[in-house]
Image (cartoon, rainbow, N blue to C red):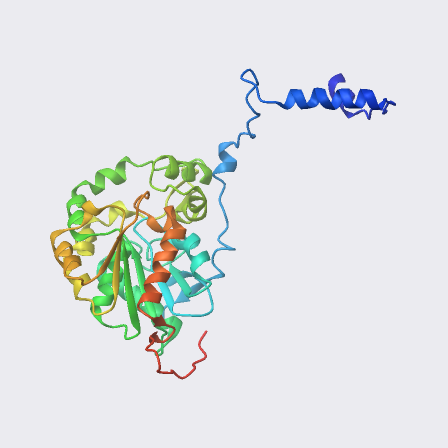
Length: 358
């Protein structure tokens, strides 16, 4: 310890001062506190180093619990995060390369009024399947239906499917199958057939140009934020870790989902998506980050009042992550407007029998 530190730690002995001296000191302090054009700038808060700013955040406190759903007669195990104990089930499907934790921040808000379930799709997050690269739309739809069947049996509660990007395509195709009698609503997040189909020719280049290896999880989180894929640091710290895996050979972190090896399935995700969305018989809403992403079919359908559309400002592609509060409000308002209760659409004056279901 140097002399200055030692001196600073010494306790000074108070001296007796007259009342006149005290008044003079008070007056001097008051003058010194007056603002001046020559005053120094206020002290800046301590700078947060990168590793602290982008440190991973645990999902506890956002979701209530996590579970593994084992699919009967197969070795497939799907990881789900759940929150809430009442109301209809908001079943969330993430986009390609994301995970169920993409909905963590919004789930922490919605769980006060609804039940939220977010699953890790095949080849993503903590899910484990026999064929991690089979991301065909048929397989993804069957996965979702199998998870719902395993979780709720033959008497599922009212379900609102929410899908972002690739997950939005899966949600629309599941709804089109009409294999889910308790489906009460459909929410699609920032995916439109026209734009998606046009972007497929660039997708391999986009995937190959992104950073592939990270020395730490913090570096991956920092890259996702500074690269613009996510704009909310808290959400990035929550969701990005689950999109990575550690490569023992290269001694670094890489992307969990091998999207570049699934190109054969991409067209099937989006082809005919607009017509399927419009033909779904349940209430539906399309959340977009920009109006230029509407194709002709959806533009006509929107003008005919076949679905509700909301353009969310000041956000990137992952609306649920960038502005989770606004996203949660839009979902809850959609449920309230369409009077969707735990057992489906609630008509005033008609009482439903109470059913005890977890």
